[in-house]
Amino acid sequence: MHKYRTDMYEGMIAETVMVPGHDSTVINAYFARPLGSGPFPGVVLIHHAPGWDEWYRETTRKFAHHGYLAISPNIYYQFGHGAPEDIAAKVRAAGGVPDDDVVGDIAESLDYLKSLPQSNGRRDYSAPARLGDKRSLWHAEPRDSMRPWTAGAEEWLCPNKS
Image (cartoon, rainbow, N blue to C red; front, side, top):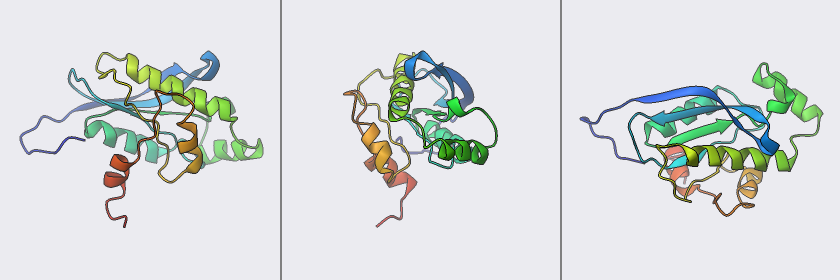
């Protein structure tokens, strides 16, 4: 995260994009990045059980504001489109999203970030989901390029945490 200065240029682009997901399925994701040539580090944000909602778009933009390429894939894509709470109900009724799909979507989103010309291209990209979500950190383990990163995020997302 870069330290804010009153004379620094601020700008970002944020949009819904289509990216490869698990098994080459095309999924939608919310992507934001700072304007400029970079290189920038990146982060994959995985939504919580209530669904791919506005909070994740806001948080994706916040990471971009702080100098990251940020993407939040819709890991519920296979359940259709609609209000987040309606899609989450479908997911619960089906017993959840298969682990391989979640891991594959995270991995493909990470690869998407690393392929961008603004990427720093290093292997230090992270795949945190909601902080404190045991499953999200577990999912970050299967690939060497997906190392859990929580200390920095926790510091600015939860500054008053004791």
